[in-house]
Length: 113
Image 1 (spheres, rainbow, N blue to C red):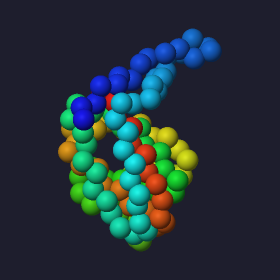
Image 2 (image 1 turned 120 degrees about the vertical axis):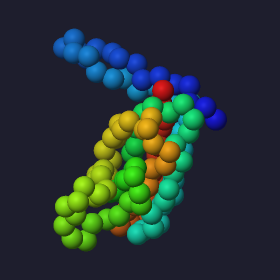
Image 3 (image 1 turned 90 degrees about the horizontal axis):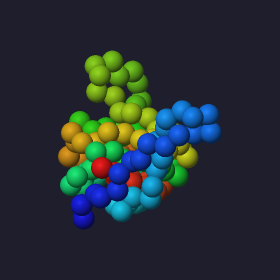
Image 4 (image 1 turned 180 degrees about the vertical axis):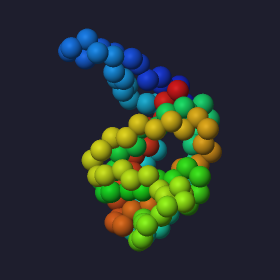
């Protein structure tokens, strides 16, 4: 399925520009198991992904996501997204996104043009 939904600029009550999220025509759900990295393929036409999960997650676009157990100082660390935070990331230069958590949970990935 090709991503067809756009992110639309809107104004908040104070007149500031912000992004409004329409429900995407391409939403995937990943059921992740604790400590098992999942590689999710970015769909054709996607430029942005809104990610929200039922557990804390770590994501990595360049390799396999990992929950850090020590310092990572070479720039290869995974990006942390706390539970119940909706995080918008650019994915137009990615082919996959690796996801991992310390816990079993669900991850929603809504893709936009």
